[in-house]
Amino acid sequence: MTRIYGHFIHNASPQPSSWIERISPAHGTVVAKFAEGQDSDVDAAVRAARAAFDTGPWPHMDAERRASVLERVAALVADNLERLARIEVEEVGKPIRFARHDMQTVVALFKYAAGLAMQLHGLAYSTIGAKRTGIVLREPVGVVGLIIPWNFPAETLAKKLPFALAAGCTCVVKPSELTSGTALELASLAAQADMPPGVINVVTGYGDVVGSALSGHPGVDMLSFTGSTRVGRHVIARAGEHIARSAVELGGKGATIVFRDADVEAAVDGALASVFFNQGECCVAGSRLLVQRDIADRFVEKLVGKANALRVGDPFAETTDLGAMIHRQQLDRVLGHVDAARREGAKQLCGEVMLSCESLFMKPVIFDHVQPSMGIFSEEIFGPVLSVTRFDSPQEALALANQTDYALANSVWTSDLDTALEFTKRLRSGIVWINTALDGALQLPFGGNRSSGFGRELGEAGIEEFTTLKSVLIHTGKRQPLFAP
Ligand code: NAP
Ligand code: MG
Image 1 (tube, protein in one colour):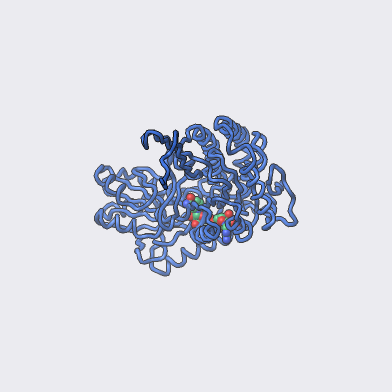
Image 2: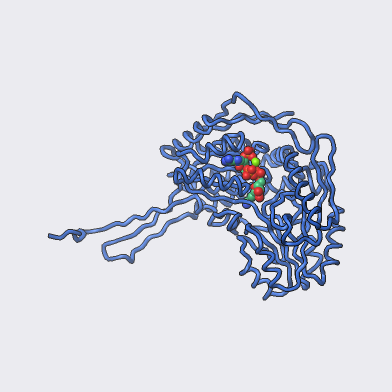
């Protein structure tokens, strides 16, 4: 049955004049219809969020009460977990067991942010003079525009939204037009959890209309964007026009660096998951394998064996490892990279396209003997494509790993503590994994540097991101006049 959604503005669902149909990438059927938003919808949503921030109860509410609303949202998401996971499967095409895991993460993120709401605090100085007391208040930044991509729709939203809310901000969300279902469902669950009207608003539609209008709206105090580097650059510029703050989580070109002293089985599994999880549509993917030359042949052989055994197909099947690609253009883009790599002389060891009906499936691709000069080594592919490059010395591995404009996440596989620590310090990424990959904890900040963006999600940094500081100086007694006669 097709799910039909209007926007979500001030806890109401205004109906649009035109709709966007979402065809399930795995099944070729229409699964949802979303409102096609216009500038006027963005304006209405920003006004609602602005009023909720400027005159509503949310920013000044006792943090314990804000936390209890977020806890109730977490409980409602948990109650609806299977339904929400299935929406994510229909719209994204990702395997159901991973969609369930994403939704469990959403629950955990709302609970964690609720806890942080209670921890948020400023500072006081009693050391600045006998009659002077300094107070630093940490306040919510205001109305935040959240722009979300399609690969982890609910999870990416939950890395931002509950943290902004916990800080006391109000929000306007712009999900991807391909995968807006869970954002709208979350907003209506929040309303059931007694979230005041106007605190969460969702406007659906295309990025160049809705996303652009939101980024450029003078009523927005901060933009928090996740998506491509190309669009991120545009959002930063639009936000800059009205001096709004921005935080951007962009692309990546992560390396999985395997030394000869690594636990080979663990490293093979790590390298495999790192690049093929979520069909490779993952910003933190380890899409470059750098492996020490003397173990490379054995390592690659094991890896190809396991890649060929991955199950690609119906994302509703419990055993599926890779589901469908998000849409035809993305599949074509990925295949363009594969063709280019072949032309440049990389050696394809496995992988092919499987086209069935309207569906968009692709088997994992591995290229060996990839040179750093080839496009596949430096361009983000965002599909199930791994490039393998051999190295001799640790210095060479480090130089190769850092030879990219991106700086999001890398993993290092070694049993040598010196190597592990040296790489931890010298890799330029915002995240380093040692003998693990695609790993994380709510407490650990998430984000990148350079072309991978700036700003951090999760951890204490994840709530502080949505706050601003106010310095207060209190003078007791009479102050010496500045212009004494
Ligand atoms: P995208 O094209 O950059 O889109 C991201 C969001 O921005 C979507 O909601 C999109 O809307 C919107 N948008 C498009 N044009 C816009 C504009 N002119 N102004 C404002 N917003 C606009 O990225 P994507 O194709 O959805 O996602 C893939 C990319 O995201 C990859 O590069 C990946 O690495 C990156 N990503 C990064 C992270 C991270 O945490 N670092 C996480 C996930 C993805 P529509 O597409 O609906 O039109
Ligand atoms: Mg897009």
